[in-house]
Image 1 (spheres, rainbow, N blue to C red):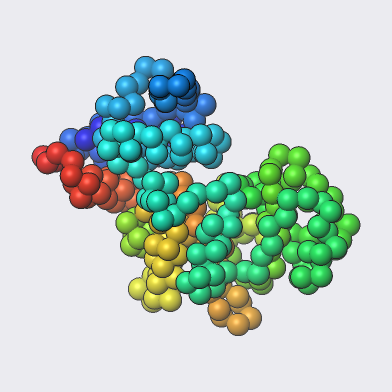
Image 2: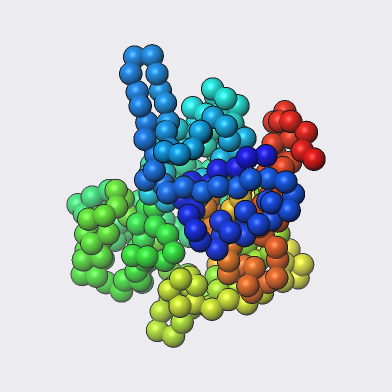
Length: 302
């Protein structure tokens, strides 16, 4: 099987996937998100990545943050025209339309009664007064398509709300406003094929509320066998959002003990998971790619 992973080039995750893929007879390549070119005229719609024949790839797994929607369009074409297998399913599932907003995921969580923090998505600073009446301080603000805890803020009053929202809107199409839930860290559950393969608790550094490893948080193994509620919630969240390879972030209210889904990340980093839990996430992903490829009618894999 020939696999392309847009968004990964010369980093540890691509090397791990390429290494595990090679042991099972597969070729794994990466490219930059910005390598994409699409030629269009009255008769042609042609996605291009220099040096690669896109139609020759059996499976594409998107790890892009920038150019996400352009890649969604390009791989949807490859899926329809050449039967290319695309991960995640939400990209090509006609029952799951993707939009430039997290509202599609929030809507499905609402429909399926999956608990998540009270939230509002705003597109203009004119909405401050309305939003402020919906919540109590402190609030958490983040860009609609944020990654790695960047530009995520905890605000204590309206002055901070105005300043931080305007700051985020300079680079983002929208801002997510959320209630703050007291906690001692969050839990990143890694699911593959809607099944939890491992989890780690991420503990924030001193004087920061963000738990992301990329901003200084530390990780430790989280036992899903002893915490079946967390496992079930993560698996359900990944399934209803059609995110086959997902990093589901869950928070537990330290006052009530209730679990909430913070985010279903469609392009999760797994370096920390492998480091802190010993789970071979790269191999689990490759094995799932094999399964979904064969299920799609692909050639027999040796």
